[in-house]
Image (cartoon, rainbow, N blue to C red):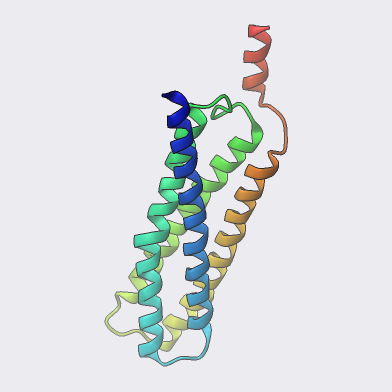
Length: 165
């Protein structure tokens, strides 16, 4: 039974993580298109779609990846605080979600303005582009950390290992 749960949680974690990367890539593509000189109506539409993708797809997938990763670490021998690579993934994921939610909130507030002036769009466009680019880079880095598993065990794990030996 535990083996089936581990496989299920691993599958859930991989699917939500990969889905998050894909959704952020789509968000970035829209940010690039939205950065080009478009009319206010087109820009508002593009940024509205970005807001929808951000709140309805990216944020839930990132949160699901975080939760499934925590559960996965707790039900496997890897543990949550035993290896630096897991701690790094946890910290980067939490940071990414915090920045994502802040960015989405800022974009939502800007788009909610009844009159969206060119200067509002000029300020919002590069902001979204930079955040989407950095977010995608961090998600790829988290994936690489998962594959390479760099660094060793944490002092917490070393003490626990010494006590059991």
